[in-house]
Length: 225
Image (cartoon, rainbow, N blue to C red; front, side):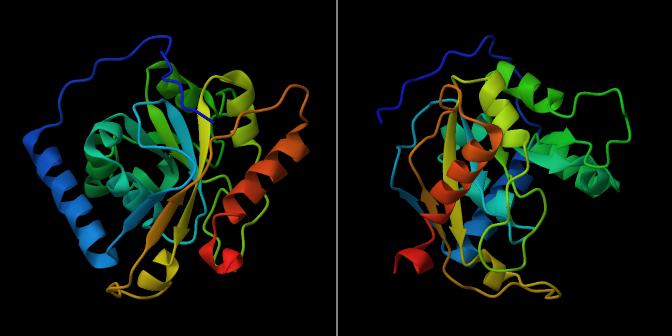
């Protein structure tokens, strides 16, 4: 499929990051690439200025950091990770990193505000011209394979059908920083970017979510071997 540049409804102009935020972003991206030796394999698409939702497997706290760091700078500037406010708003340092460095889209995973639309922050970001990094499993998966996807990806695809949905398989990062380890292990990680998906006409939610899940699993190099 040939990528088509998407013109968002309105591109929100944002002020440049502060000097501390820029320095912190440089430090984080450099450290992530140095520790993991990350390779980006664009197998089904190209790193073009196209508005996308990158959806990936989730096995480590460092997943969105490595994916974000692996994008070319121009794409990184307009790509925002989706993250849980319950974790990232605890403490000043976390708040600074997610808001000022990553410019993350924070969602209420605990649904404390019952009247709020849970997808609205993501829809607002898309309407402002940004791309997103999303983990459809919803939480870290410490087991093999990929858990069934939650429904958010389907609803985003249905409400913003022009946005490309790109599967990204992150290989080996769970071994770099396994649960309970304080210091990372310097191991090679690979990020495989697959062919963009779109919601097919009259495709049901279960069928679409399983198709997206299988598209992600197809990028796992261990399954392909």
